[in-house]
Length: 320
Image (cartoon, rainbow, N blue to C red):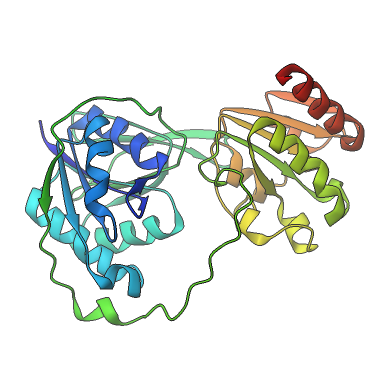
């Protein structure tokens, strides 16, 4: 079978879940070849092999940490040249989408972003995307070059599939642009103990109806009872009630969890663009005419200050 490059998202050797999902999709169209870069890259091999990687290309250099995305693009291009793959898959994070776009330009290929499914086709991989606030589902393929495709987290199951996972060192020559933008400092994000928003299986979000920063404690309590991440609409973020890092929507983060609970969110098109591919959507809103109800699987017409605490209490009772 043809080989498929999979860009590995990891932190010091700990592979993030979206990469394991990519390996599941990659096996549908070929033999996955993982590309792991930076500190701890070699430590990813065992996990990647357990999930179907026939080969793991690794490279570590100060440039990957000290500069922005160009060194990673250089490395991925080196892997592309070495493997001649049938496709290149990356997760749909902000950084990975920039890497994908730059790589596509370099190799003269088409790019598909935010795919939610992937299948083999007679003329190349076919990607499924959700468009216009989930009003349409499209299937598309790249018509020029080797397809570069980014996939939303939670779009595929994580499936174990033992493979060789042979580790090879990737030789990388950095371009002149690689050191053009240097990272001068980093500030670690304070951990909440909750899952990463874009990777979480469950997301609980609050909007304008929460009516104040202090009231987000109600949203957080429900999220914690479910082991979920906390999101917020743009209205809540613009009001200063919750950090921008938690914003879900067109100008925030795009999520695709198994369960999305929207509380006090009207469902403007900008918000729907960021959560429309969630597998199951539940909304709580006292306005029965709110647009969010056109999208949901389950809707509760009621005051979130009454409904959400009761839901949290019921969940905690059942857990107990």
